[in-house]
Image 1 (cartoon, helix red, strand yellow):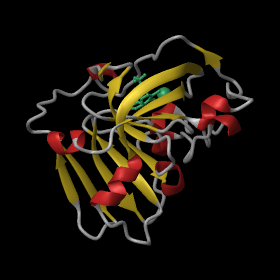
Image 2: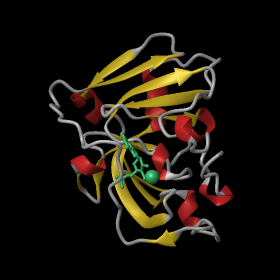
Image 3: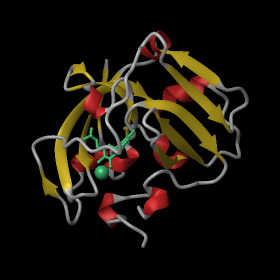
Length: 196
Ligand SMILES: Nc1nc2c(c(=O)[nH]1)N[C@H]1C(S)=C(S)[C@@H](COP(=O)(O)O)O[C@H]1N2
Ligand SMILES: [Mo]
């Protein structure tokens, strides 16, 4: 298995402005974790693609597997260093669907009703992973079981838990928190916390 160390861990200004280190992840969510039956779980890839795809849990486990080591920066100002995830890299999605040239962004859909938008130039970075293991154990339900996105270069509200859908969009539209005042992009080094 390939190991990817996020380039953010190697920045000279590793801790973004206004953040402090914490030795653990703090559980944050808009509602309690949803009940999951893996035999009925599906990941849907749709929107600006030539033909939508639907993956079963077995098909997800057959995708390329990488270990990601990345710091995790929450907009509420805690940052957890060197979090270890295992999952499939976002680039695997390009092998499953033909993305239309008009696509600019994705909306990630979650089973708790959460959504978040990620522009394609961030979404397909080499350190973006859909994770199903955390510190070499199955992903705990609090942290997004069965599958969560990890986007190390953006504030962790972009790292959607309980992912069930990946929608390609021709326009970078706002997700759950972005509609409620969080920044449309959320770069921690530019302190893009809120836009109001
Ligand atoms: N589905 C879903 N994903 C989510 C959230 C949520 O409410 N629902 N909260 C986000 C926020 S604000 C943060 S800081 C991180 C927290 O991840 P953790 O609970 O694993 O520490 O999850 C993000 N992903
Ligand atoms: Mo957050």
